[in-house]
Image (cartoon, rainbow, N blue to C red):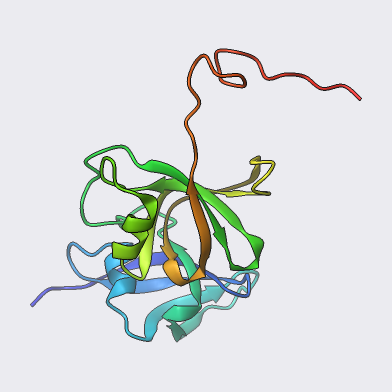
Length: 180
């Protein structure tokens, strides 16, 4: 019989609320495996809505309301296996206009669409950052870290081109300055 341990998860919901609480995890569990193993509900103890001081002793939450989840104490791995190759940087446009940028674990030469088609209900997004807009590409200041993102909220996704050292706007050449 495996013993479960309580670990804190942070859950960002469709209505922009945030819930934190403890979940029971067995040995070797990851954020992705926990969420993927739930049919409808996830059980939390000592659950607290953001802005609330009073924890709820026990709460169940519909998994299909979770947009992304993370382990704020970094004590639960995002996935069960280490990445064999560096993650592929991608932007993901979510329902409601949110744009996230982060690394997806694509195999060499694997297409983004093929990866998403074969992945489960939640995908790991490494070093995730919320962007202000697709056009500006500037971070809002919301570094999310390692998150499990629900696939059904993704409207569009595209790989972020890695600048080549001699391309305009790359680190090797200063970006053009515009004055009005």
